[in-house]
Image 1: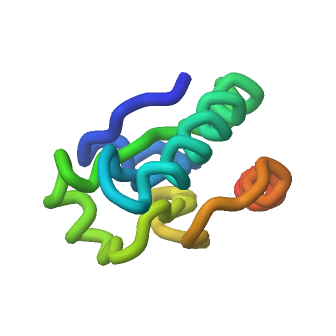
Image 2 (image 1 turned 180 degrees about the vertical axis):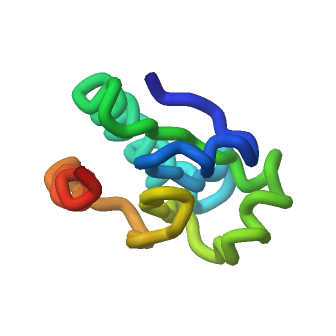
Length: 102
C-alpha cells in the first residue's frame, strides 16, 4: 500500500516517506518516484510502510523535516530518521536502503 502521509505516519516502526510535488521542474522526478514507490509498497507490504507527501499540499510536514529539494526520501526506524536520499534513483537504490531498515 502506498499511502498519503499525515503526522501519525511517522510513528510506524519502519517507514519510508517520499516527498514530491505536482508541478514545476520536480514533477518528472516525482512521477518516477511515485511509480517506484507503488512497486516497492507492493513488494514490501507488511514489512515496511511507504508513504508520500505532496510538498505543496503539506507544507507543515515538509517544513518540519527541512525538505528543500524534490524528490526527497526519508527513511525512518522507530520514529527516527536513519537515512535520506535526495533526487531520483533507480529502484535498486531504494531496495538497498529498505533492506538496511529490515
